[in-house]
Image (tube, rainbow, N blue to C red; front, side):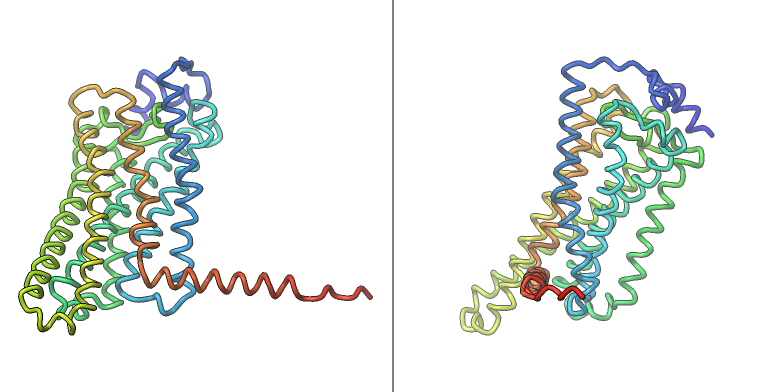
Length: 337
């Protein structure tokens, strides 16, 4: 396949890395890259996996949380959890400095394909959530007709299909996958397949980023204008204050989500586009990848732990867990026969 030829023709051949024969100079830069990516893996393992897993479990076992709005949060958590779990396959590379021999070049290709698809699913899940919240605030009268449970599930399933379709060229000959030692993972080759790199960055990052930005900025502006009108009609504040306060909190939370999205994925998109036309230092790839992936942990905080319904569910789960432990501890040991 074309991508295999590309992977094997670089200055640091994939097969050499797979066989462990490539010699990599151990210098200060490589140590820094190892520390940076190692810290990312640790942070996402310690905080990202439990954070997203709690969201998924809470919504699956608690029927009260299975609302249309929350199903979008569940999808974000599932996508982010997939990204983090796949990232764990890079742990051996952090220790040995090359792609694991047991996984080989085929494993490298499979990883690159799945990792790309899950990252795209994550960015489009954020965009879909932005559209959902935008409709809720800007067009509340249309919301329940537009976002039914069945239609929402169909939309989210379609996003996963789209993510897979956009990633297929990586293994079909248009794109190319290779092991990048500076980030210790297999990903698409920015130089070996420039047209695909531009395509995937625009389709997988810039488009969902633009959709999210438009929705959240208009949403925040709508909430702000509504507050101004309320301030001009002091007599009606008492009847509208509670609902408006909820909208204000939602507006601020989603503005924070937008800032995090732009900060995390913006540098990655710019870095990948620049890399198609000129050489980019290894530390740039490390920093932009670090920022992009750390969002998989931050989303659990923004969309999960800052959600009042989920907060109540977490407390209920924790209370039940403590009660079960207390009951087990107080239960008398069975008398041996």
